[in-house]
Image 1 (cartoon, rainbow, N blue to C red):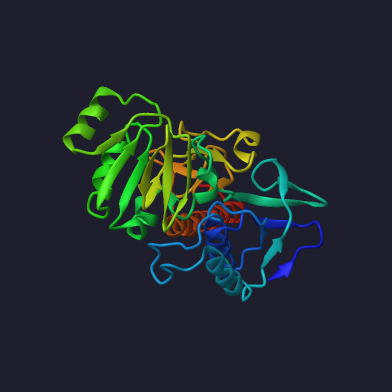
Image 2: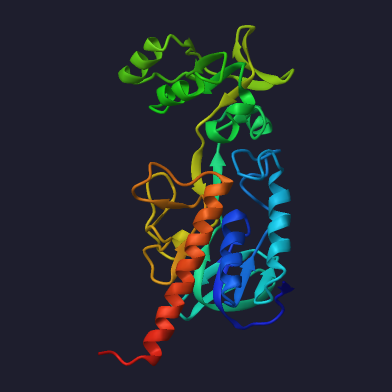
Length: 316
């Protein structure tokens, strides 16, 4: 692994060095593709102290996995890293231009986006400070760690009944805090059928309390909880989908096919930012992000191989 210092053309520019980007770089490096990986020090799972539900890494800090991945990639000298933020991507297959802060532009035959999403949390004071510990959004990533306690579900959307059912095997009790919103009739009917404790008033704030948290409901009224689940709004963490005119879904993810190809030839996407149309939501775990990085990396390699093959084999 070397630090890129000069302008040159690479086979693939990987934008982002989380689990998806690093796995893509590893896959391409093993095929001796020239790869440049652009990395910053910001990652979606920075708030999380540990990552769970990842075979062989269950409970490990996310930064530990990234460090181990970089050490793996050091064995492949066709992979370079640039520790700078990308500002713009333009061009077309075989001639993409990646503009970088305080560094020369880089050209690449293909681009693989792995910059992830950002989580826009409900506007509740104190929520951001607890997000990633006792406040979470994925029951498969954090549900087991909140087991055997009272778990709050913040919101009144259509996801609440399913989330309550998922957590019913783990939590001692599930509590719904609608935060002043009025549930739709079918959601309200499901809440009643599940016999859940419900608080309909606005949540004025949350604060740490023992090993859990306290939801402040006003008039000296609060609810003690072991943990809380929220439903963030997802936003692209970088502007490249808009710059490149990529097709995106209503949930904020870039639409990709099964191999990670976007709507623009030569541009691939992997990780949390990528959303296959047949899935209900973008991938949202470290393991699945890495898996899509492998697939998109292999797809880039095959795409380049087919292009090179077409250049030397006459059409029939």
